[in-house]
Image 1 (cartoon, helix red, strand yellow):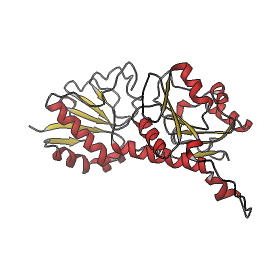
Image 2: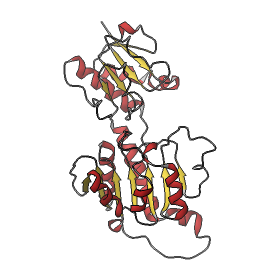
Image 3: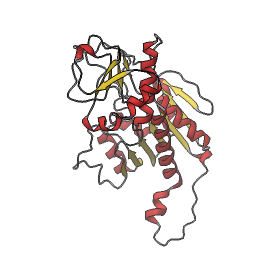
Length: 310
């Protein structure tokens, strides 16, 4: 008999996946019936993106796993009705998208591209940027996305420091961890990239005190989670000149409200949560691979540690 797979997500997502996901399953020799509407007792797997129509997982007594389409699972991980194994999305589409976004915006600020595009206005100023090896970049978070971004920046020649909550090692990167390591990581961070998950310990990790640890005129890039930065402290730091510019891809409320001060601030660049989008083709491959593993009794990939929150 075919497996029953419930696709539960915002309606526009189904249009993206309705042809690609069945193909991915077929390529993995999985016989499955995929639908957005199945009796709960018949469901074997749930492919999930946050939506209002599925908040209670209790009826899905036979579901073997919930496969998240998002890398972040903070909207679901604390749902007390969710007793099934939960897998977060880890795929090369997310990884490649993130490292390209990070590399592009680091290079933008390193080279001072805004100054040449918007600021010279006929002035023949031959001031050149430093070489990448003389530019100190700190990445907060050395998970899959942070590690990939760090490697890319190392390959470009940057002096890269990475910070994580637990010890990590990475060739070419100065790896720091813990509270003491955080101050050391920020004190020389001319460009700081935040790629941490949303957990109680990471919320407002860049607050007023920590932004003041950074060199005056530093730049912040946040493609991680909106809650990583204290918004009011950031506005104050921009006003004082402590922070020169912030490029932000994620926000506490999305879409970012039209009246939010970030939209029109001259020292803030807003990108609409595009740094690492889940792409249907690569995500469908990961989902199919994981269902195949489950069906042959292998360990599921990218299982969420509920105690850690990711």
